[in-house]
Amino acid sequence: MNEMSPPTTQTDIAAVVSGLGQRARSAAQALSVASIDQRNTAVTEAANALRARTAEVLAANAKDVEGVQGSGKDAAFIDRLTLTEDRVAAMADALDAIAGQDDPLGRTLAHFDRPNGLKIDRVSVPIGVIAMIYESRPNVGSDAGALCIKSGNAVILRGGSESLHSSRVIVDCLTAGLKAAGLPEDAVQLVDTRDREAVKHLLHSTEHVDLVIPRGGRGLVSLVQREARVPTLLHLDGNNHTYVHHSADLEMAAGLVRNAKMRRTGICGATECVVVDAAIADTLLPKIAGTLGDCELRGDARARSILPDINPASDEDWDTEYLSNILSIKVVGGLDEAIGFVQAHSSGHTDAIVAGDGNAAQQFLTQIDSAVVMHNASTQFSDGGEFGMGAEIGIATGKMHARGPVGAEQLTSFKYLVHGSGQQRP
Image (cartoon, rainbow, N blue to C red; front, top):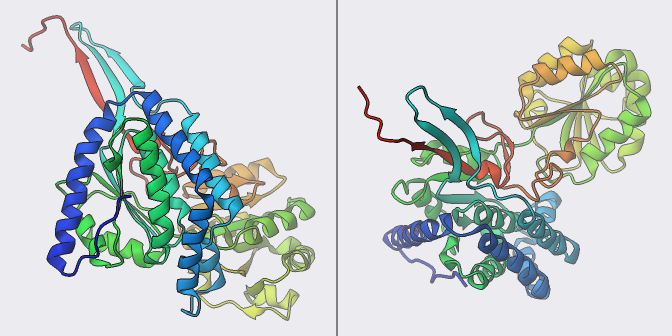
């Protein structure tokens, strides 16, 4: 198991993180030239280890959950932290799906034949060493480790302190897979300390880390933006909207809103605000309220005139990722106002329109500048597994390098291979 003794001083933490980086750099070099069969074997054997050690994973997770009981953490947080037999099985299945995908490395992305006879290929290669910093959800470590192995990258995992027991066993399963494939176990390592200073040292580790990927709330992302010296691939919060156009099938709309909000309230793909055309609000809002069950509704003045028992929405509500059974409601005059509202308040993660009018849908899809924009579908489909990637390392909300669900293919860079026959530049 990648386990270390708890550091006692800041110097110790710096040395530990530096050691992780050095070993990861060495492992990344070996992994970058490993065959696809080796990388697939490592991921498949890690999946088998998860299945074989399910009881151990669940016992470790029970310690984590027990550790946050009475700490004031809300139900959504505890749900994200909690593993069940079905969730562990889904983790293993995701690894098998990753192993079954095409090799993301060595792909010819472009080819150029130059007039001077040079032949140039742009080919996909690993990024190198990735530091993955995430909160609460222990399955993220499993997904991230497998995706990095598949894409030839070494990864240093720093999960939330609340999930440390779970993360230890999960990482042990990943390293067992690497060992079975004859690959260096240091390709997946865990920062095995709850000390938050370790995160800062990772963010400053320009000598050993090529890319930092944070996955968590605004606090974590703000820390990364403030402290990072290493390039980052940001995964911001999911303040997602579902807009219901006046042309929508209202039964479909009510069902989609329920699924988008209530299927799992604590995931980043959940809808946090429903935007409704005034022309259908009198009919649709009671339908939505009747389908949501145990969900607190907060609305603007027009919504409250239709649903007088709901709570008033504040300006802060429009910019809040609840990750809980709370939904805000905004009533708008039409498509243009809806687009303006969503653009002003969306976090750029996932937004959806429910509409029968194809032109209205196309305008929304074109003008909303989010990583994922949907038509007549639940925002909870914003997920790498649902996109056919097997799993995801997160949903990138920026615009550089990768955007949307980040799978193995998105964890690659490229280089140019130039073939000549003695050409000299004049």
